[in-house]
Image 1: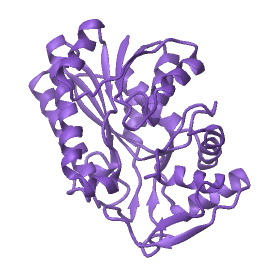
Image 2 (image 1 turned 90 degrees about the vertical axis):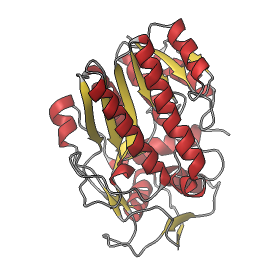
Image 3 (image 1 turned 30 degrees about the vertical axis):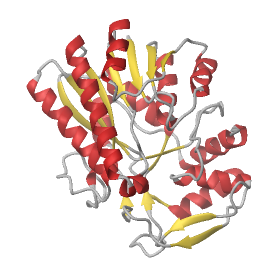
Length: 331
């Protein structure tokens, strides 16, 4: 099946492209490279020894997206493309609302035009807001603590309404938690331009000597050691979850958490990284970051029951693979 992957040159997108190719699908990538680099496409092909069709476009561009659909018989869409930094979304809300919501509308409208009824959406656990953990798909969503989360929640509502109005439309909304790690080859992983927004690339840059020490945002949360708790999931498990969602699509809108179901604090992650790689990671405690919550981890039982998917890789392998990629990565 021809699968259009928007944002396919990015961290999660590129690893999902590998999983799709290995599952026998043909991959067409649309990416404007604002959060990624062109060489990710070459590395996907290097890992799989298969071709990838690449369009450097912005998926908010109606004409450019239409060109892809007219050039290829698209069987399904996996939509990753979007701005993704929680902190930045607080500072630049309009950019996030415009970019992330418009792209969803452009893609779904084009899907309807060409009769494409298989759609997988990259959502986020941030849609739960500061809810009670573990997060379950049936929860009423609380207002998100940041505009990034709101853009995901709004896109979810758009997709759900489209599925209600169009019985043939099948959509999987994947709320995933905190992806870390890298492909086991060390060729594709989470590469950051400038100061990283996420924890793991910051940890690996400190380990590599690029940065002096890790900044830990707050140690006064009501958690095991006062630092924020998150459900860290290996990016390869996450990629396999997207393939499982695509292969098990049924009519209507379906929501799944993709996580391990286990919370790990920032300091626990630092200790796991040090244990996995034998490298000390110096850190300092700084003020809390706007938009962050204390704890976030999943109830992932629905994905296991309906998709046959569970996260298989542990925190040590996540840390080991992330460090392998960082050692290979060159700006």
